[in-house]
Length: 147
Image 1 (cartoon, rainbow, N blue to C red):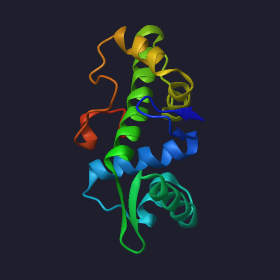
Image 2: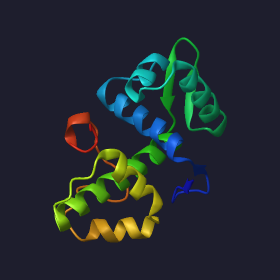
Image 3: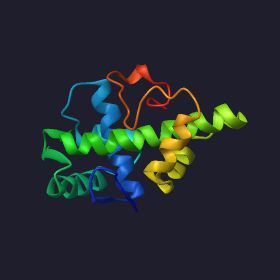
């Protein structure tokens, strides 16, 4: 489990994946995001999505209305954007320093293992377009965001 830099909420790798999926879908289309849309995107069951969204709602990360859909709260979006930034920084670092093209899942896992300060150090070594949070407003703004 990893802790976000803004607060002491602990988000697992799997939970972070759901939040990042919601961010990607939100940037691609106006919310709310339906359970089936998120399930298809993440390749998980609809029941798994419902369970996760209910948990996130209790933590204040999403608002969720059954049969209507879910939206990230400001806190949920901030967490998702930090995780996306971490993944992007790790991918860009490996590509810039060693020409290694990490898969998105690999970069995401590495980014979550590193401290916030260490990811900042990586991103300071090259031209990182965002600072500490993914700043994309459209899904095609960042080729790493959409992958």
